[in-house]
Each structure stands twice: as C-alpha cells, then as structure tokens.
Length: 330
Image (cartoon, rainbow, N blue to C red; front, side):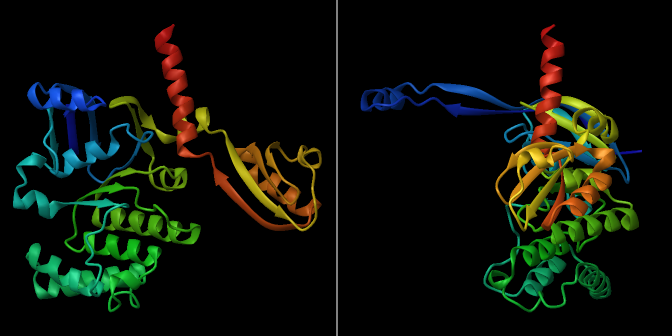
C-alpha cells in the first residue's frame, strides 16, 4: 500500500517584476506587472509504507517546495497528493499527528530555554498521555544519547546536539511519515553516522515511511535503496540507487595528509590524482577497489590522516542531468 501518492503536483509562484530606476518604480506603482516562476512542474511518484526514498536535486530544483506541500505548509497550484490517505493542505489533526517535517536549516526548539520544555510543549500539542510521553522520552533519550542535552538551554548546545534533539522532539508523537530536509546538515562525520543509524532504526521499528533530501551522498548511500532525482521542478529519474551509483558514481575519493612532501607523480599508481599539494592529496579510485588502494597508500607513504568519501551528490546529479539532456537533444 502506498503511504505517499503524488500525481502531477505543481507549484507556481507569481512575483512582481521590478526594473531599476526611479521612473520605473513609479510606473510599477500604477501598472504592476507579474511573472510566473514554476517551482515544481507536474511531479508524480508513489512511496510504499515503510520505504525510505532519497529525494535528490541541485539547489532550487524543487525538493523543499515538494516537501512543504506534502507536509501541508504550502498549497499546490495544481495536481493532487495524499499522505496516509489524507490531503496534506487540509491540515486535519489526524494527518498532523501522523507526519513530521524536519528541516536542517530550521528549528522548533526554543533558543533560550532547556530543550525538555519544548518536549513538554509538544506533548500538549499532540495530546500525548503521560505514560506515552514517558516511554517516548526514555526511548529517544537513550537512542540519541540526549541525557546531557535536555536540561541545558538550547543556545548552549553544539550543532550536533541540537540536531539530535531536533530529531527527537520531531519524533516524540511517533509519526508514520518522516519528511527530512538535510537532516545531517553541518554535522561532523561521527555525528552524521549516528543520525543515519537512528533514522534507520526508527524507520524499521516504527515501520515508518521516509522521504529524505540531502546533498550528502553518504546519507543516500546508507539509507535509501531508491532515489527520485528532480531538477528545475521535473523528475529526471526514479529508480534503484544501485543503478545510479554504478552508472554515475563508480569512484570514491581518498583524501590524505602526509608527514613528508609527496608528489602527484608518486601517487599516480594509487589512482587518479585530482588535487595535490606538498603534504596532501585527493585521489579518485574505483569504488570496488577502495580498500585495496587505501591499504596500498598507507603501506607506501607516511600518512598522517586518511578519509574516504563518496562522490558528492551534486556531481552525481550533474552527470545524470548531462546524460538526460544529451538524450533529449538527440
């Protein structure tokens, strides 16, 4: 059964046209002209109950606008959508209890007071009983290691602590649909891993449906078997992540810092050298050989630090877009 059904959903913003100069400003007061800016254009897809789907695209592609329509924050210009059988923009109480929207750039935590007060407020907003509230708090606190965060004013928490707490308060009412917009934005590598593990654990235990946007390819690789790629408001690809990775991200990046100067020529046997400074380098290697190439690098050179990274999501999308554009122009 589909938890999310989107059919030809569109959003067009009508904005006034403005030209520079005092005379043009005066003319605009008398005869204002408008133009339409399409943000989402006839998008259609379905997501099954319990499925985790990555929603990818460059900045301005329409990802966040789509999430806002699915959460009921925006009315569409045309088309239809249902989430768990509800029309989102009707904002019925049953719908609001069943979903949550987490945006990495926005916070529902009160800045000046301890986070636990926001949890108490959400308890009343969602009408949770005392026992239900206690169980959810205990589980979320343990899973996200929030013991030291709840009694501290939010403004004194680190970015990682705030993001974990933001996730916890958003899931307090045990929603069945999670709309996550950049959930690991600004977090270090260790905290990104913890947040991903928590999202996966919650989705599996609560049988929740997740639609996730991220510019971090690591989020997508670890969480999303399927991806929907959108650009300029239109869907370019909807299918298995594996096929996208095999075709458009067949390499990984090894980023290394050295104890002594190392030249690019010395590193060419490890892989394709993308960046090279006296004491550092970025090397591209085949995805399936990354462990072997990293071991070779560590065995031959005095390495101070080494990290392995996925191809950035923006680059994967760029390559996919280029192929789609090339195919449509032929």
